[in-house]
View 1 (cartoon, rainbow, N blue to C red):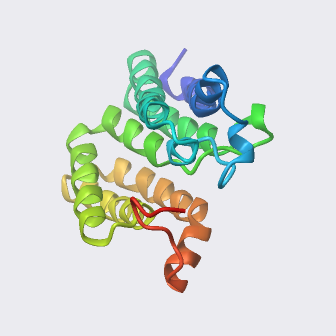
View 2 (cartoon, rainbow, N blue to C red; view 1 turned 180 degrees about the vertical axis):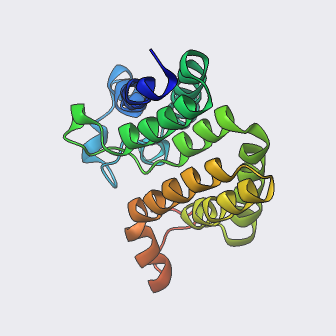
Amino acid sequence: MGSDAFLPVALIIGYLCGSIPFGLILTRLAGTADLRSIGSGNIGATNVLRTGRKGLAAATLLLDMLKGTVAVIVAGYLGGPDAAMAAALGAFLGHLFPVWLKFHGGKGVAVYIGVLLGLFWPAALAFCAIWLATAFASRYSSLSALVASLVTPILLWWFGHLALAALFAVLTLLLFYMHRENIRRLRAGTEGRIGQKA
């Protein structure tokens, strides 16, 4: 199979990996309430944290990152760099809109980091550094993710990875869309801060 012909396969591989709802699986195994009935109803680590199980939230974060990384590495090995990027897009869409959960998934931050790690790890480190710096200054998790994702395509462009910069510009737009309610609350001054009691 030619590299171009493999791209749809890579997209599907990525989607299937990305759509694994680790947050939901882990919380069900732990016997907690249905994750979709808690907080935002999303399946990501932030909502898992609302169950009060920090260990489960950390495991969800790690596994959601790794499913993106694995999808990129596998597709890249089988089909090359373009296939890796197609898998990255697929994994991100799979996490945001998993078919198994009626297309209601997470907000994508962990998978964003995971696919970035698989495609160009220095940018993933930069993302984490920017997230931490913004979180330290503002104590807003959502704002930290938004700022870090906004800078990421610029960094990729700066490093000369134009195709990756274009891909992550699209992923950043999707990330902003998934955080639209957070943005509304940030503008209204009602967004919860890190460590703030509900």
